Image 1 (cartoon, rainbow, N blue to C red):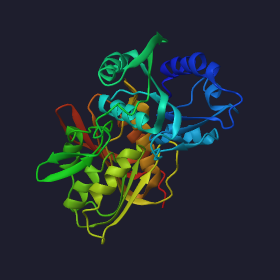
Image 2: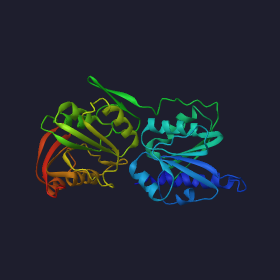
Image 3: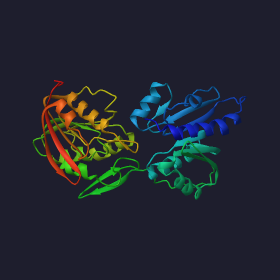
Image 4: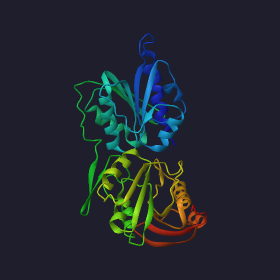
Length: 355
């Protein structure tokens, strides 16, 4: 679901500040970049105009698909020469490092004297972000509307943003190092639920395995270390930056193992490949809110891609009631372990097997 309130504030700022200043006699349209772009009511006012063009960046597959289906130019990672755009819009999220990386990128993409306009919801730390950015650039102005803050500044060659905020960084986990990136789930350490699930891996897991919601690839890496009987593993992940980290982390394994890494929305996009096992630590947040339907959707899709004797191995927070949906999708299941607020579950024999 799009973060509608800061988007409304951003569109309002654009209409009041930018649209009146557009030179209708200019030989070329105004070029605008939009980082973390999303569709929301009123967005057609931004995307639909003969006086400017908008190129979007959206690394999350579901929002990317929304934009793509609306016919809006969008890329998961906007790689353009510096100083390409007249204006760059930034919609912030809940992760500080990711927001700072987007603003630094926006400044690189914007031409000298062009405007960078940043919007975010009050409950995502936008006020402190504005304060931090004001220590680097001369913020022209800001305003509050729709429980959000919008602020803006002009691009100057004198501005020097740190250039390491958006690069992959290393997570140390025992003897193994992993590549991650700002804004990913558990970006700075391995989450305890995944560690608990990986403790269940052994040689019994064999054949072709799917890792649904693979993140930066920890579970897949640990599985390939734990079982020599996995001949193929397919990772499905909706965050483009996580997919790029997966490519780095899975590259260490021998070419004898077939590895497929897919930028994929598990809920919205079908998976045709059939699997012997599915492993997953499914997401359970939509923004800041817990949403059990996400995990339920992962369980349903896991059952749909398993063979008739296929098995699901998953971890979840203890308070999330997944047992009912598992019972509806599988002929039998059991809770393997419950500790420290997590539970691992093994389910077998999907009721509607795929093959």
